[in-house]
Length: 590
Ligand code: SAT
Ligand code: MN
Image 1 (cartoon, rainbow, N blue to C red):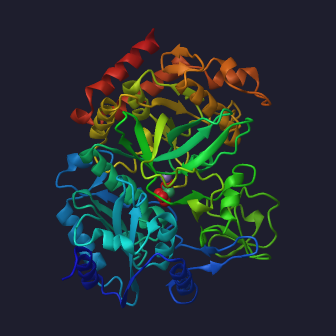
Image 2: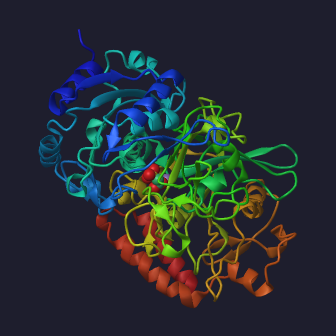
Image 3: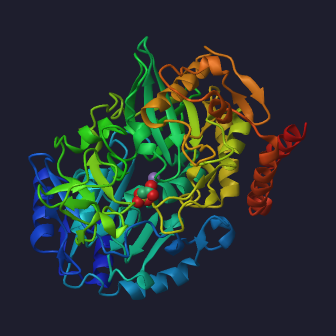
């Protein structure tokens, strides 16, 4: 008798009519074969899916160029489908599930004709972890199949593990005809199902990423009592050898990957990497909060990555231990067949092809690599990988950090007064937009917990859930906000960022270990400057003060904006958040 997985695959094949169905086993040999298919058979717009790069310098590396209209997440085409709109909340696009299915059935009818349907079976999280989830994704793209093997724990045994149960997350993906008018990323949280058509871009097509690990998982977490968050997970080792685990939420393309593998400038401090994008957080029996990374790879922004900004990522990209490594929409140095992007070490090469494969000249005024060009590489290639990465229990979190890109107002680091105040701190967060999604760049938008595009249900209820999680923890993490992006009057960043961020992390570690005091301000605790290790930095006194000031005048504009945002959630916004809001407003008046 057919299993639930087989039945579902068969149903989808009946609709989409692929020439062939291929069940991936997740092996290295298979990945090599799929790369061959992508170099010689499968095409995008009549171009190969993969181009081999110079394996002397970039072992196992291949270049992929996506369709030119398909280079970032498309939030306006991303929907969550519940029977009622209120469950989705004002933070999501909503469609009635019946209507959504009708529309997608029409678009998917025969969409895999002439193509292969790959069946991918994988775990989000370590297979032995009680917090892991079994997933099946169908796709007609060998780029997606190879990427998913890097990003997840893909293995044929997952199908056996699921057996005859229907307890698995289902993802259907087809690149369709890649036309933006026929592109949708639809979530059916109550069916644990994602249906994505018309895009091959990471965040739209690698369904284990934002779709499962955040939008569907956040809804599962709400119902099952845990949190799915857009967070880095790191262990910070201090000179005594003690490791403090920290989880940090930041919007896309705000430096999470650099933070995840930071090379410390402070002697004796070391950062151990557990994840750069997603954390699943569960209350442990000891009253602490435990984090696992459901992923096994990095899908990071290439531009700006260099030996200076992120030496450990450069080593990761050149490791070749777990192969392949993919580059998507970077430029190509024709002379040596190496990938290139703005910000890479060395001079700009003479003979470059841009991300679309056209000859590029520096005088054209356009970037050679797409600003959202990416690399896909295994975490097992990372020289700073934590020994606890494969620990099924996860790691106990002592500090949660909320960050964003704010050129004004928000100080370098602030500590919340307590859990409830910290939830408000996360909820009032904002960030200037980046190239990771298709919208205007550099505009301030509220982005609570960096989850605005990823929370799969009404964020009012999400804040309630955060407050409840705090009640389950007898030893909750302390909550902080950070901002590396404060600019001076000329618009130049004041804080050096990157490796120097360890100075802020050190203060956070000192605070959670009760080693230093702090000054109380209306918005939270802030460091005494003497407690920040600033040795070797050359920041003018005036600028330093800017990094730790609370300009009450400026905050009046901010607080009004926060209110407008919170108001959108109406009766779903918990009273505790309004209490915190009112307390902040009152403190600022004093
Ligand atoms: O959504 S992606 O996974 O493509 C990248 C991001 O926006 O964080
Ligand atoms: Mn992300």
